[in-house]
Image 1 (tube, rainbow, N blue to C red):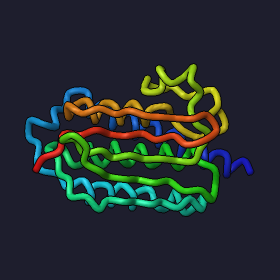
Image 2: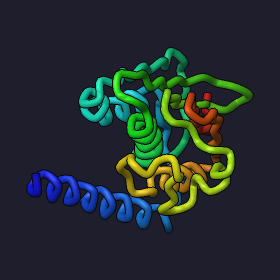
Image 3: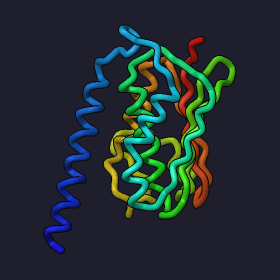
Image 4: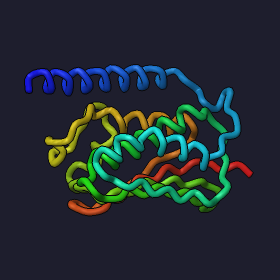
Length: 184
């Protein structure tokens, strides 16, 4: 039992170190300076595959609907990291045997990548702090995490002159949506 606890804490520390490294890399980065065309459906597919093992452990079904052809200009790795963090967040905050939906659509010249879960939701009193570094909602005390995932998402997206928004109903559905300028 003690060895299992040590292993879990070592993984948590490793995750924290990796997220701090990712965040520090974003500090001085300009993904638009050397940006390239990025096919968003492919990036979503990569992010889903990166999260599949974690989802399968919890019997969470990942549903990706990316039937739209949408491209943006930016850094492929940063976009993948942002979407992956949203998917991991949705998995972590969802009960076992539920679904996480990832959709892609075009609206008013923006590509919108939405990640929805069936989790615990976000209390209204905590919504304005959600993207702060190391912030963890009070109703998430029993959920493993570093409190850096959404901060990394926000930084990745801001660097691309894009935005991230969310809607949430406590004890119900939460949806995070990335709004990225679409290229034709």
